[in-house]
Length: 289
Length: 289
Image (cartoon, rainbow over all chains, first blue to last red; front, top):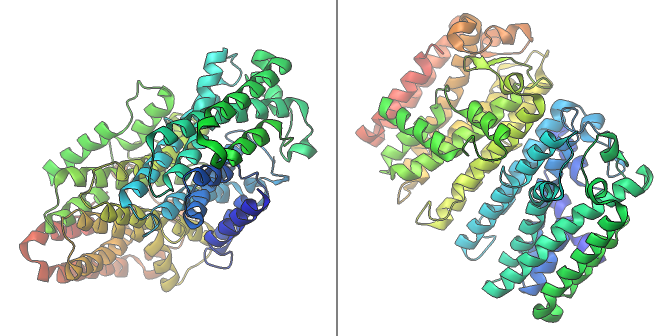
């Protein structure tokens, strides 16, 4: 996993505009937002799904960049004063603190654009129709029926006590959609697509997407700011409904473990090629940050 | 032109998510940001360029929506308190005034996503490679080497006196890039692309892109807020360099007229099919809002 992470970091650094290219302040801020830090869960999932379908690594590099740029854009905008108003992310001051609010706004905007630019480059896939499917998948996962929609539901729900199904609905959009897209984009990077494999991978992604958020909520409740690299205990302070507030910590942890096991089960028919996806399920649930 | 405008309005209203679909507040705000108002210059340019290459109108509908969504996203974000802090747009309160800042942020984010979603839909072009070219063109025009980059240069230049070449550089990015993309996307909507035609259309688009901004600056200096539908006289108050502050009003107007004539000249070899592009050059330069 270490080698793939190193590869992903190199691809990100290489694909982002150079800091000395005009407009330099914007480009510096964009690099600051993406590089150094970040678990790279979405790129790792894309690479792991790509292993199942024997996808070329160069294509997975581009897919990984697109996914991470969308993720980073959402973090930069979510941290802004009019949203979560957070000052710490990945152990560093957030972009609007380190630079300024206007720059943070443009950083997020530009990163989103760059994600679609990277995925639309000539020759990325041999089959242009598959490449359009990738673009469409990423757009739908990021928009109002995916990540941005989940964020809007989250905003509306602050200070409101949600039921378990409402909470699940929110996170299926806010976190789950992009994680599902990560696995699908990895799977679309292979030369051929097998329907049964795609279906199994999507089932896996659904379990992992929810598990990721359940664990995030547990970590927010249990960890220190130093360990997390972002402000801990924020959910309780902001009166947000979380898996911990709705289920309690022990049941939330049991749910994460259940989802981990379900993820492993749906991978069984895929055999050893899915080993890395299995390892990622373990990482997502057992991580400490 | 009236019939095409009506067609564009219908396409926008039809393509945007319905206001009663969850998340309803976000979807209402998105529709508020795009519908009712707007000159639709970019869609009109795409339709006019499409006439030159006999493009199917349904494809031009999608292209128009993508262009107008990118344009509307940039306006919503530019109006926010951390950027231009404006309260009036297209004769209505800006999105962050009518709704709130967090919603305005998500509206812009979602509109950008939706632009790429619309352009990546299955079957939009018979040739998937041409469709990827459209997506790539739109992304590059919107990003840090295009519109967002121009916005960053504009931010850095507030309160600084620019030279004419610096001003031109800024606007070639900030306004020019998306206008050029509008003409190119219209031209790519035809069944075949002819290199000489594409080149002439691009020359036309460069003239029109600059003319558009020169006229905008003249109108900001000369008009009332009521006529413009947005705050007039803002450039002078904010100490921004404009074509009027750098050249003076008479020379700025002469420049706009020169650019209009240059636009007509490059259209000559295209014959009568380019008549609507000629009419749009006149509209862009002689408009009162």
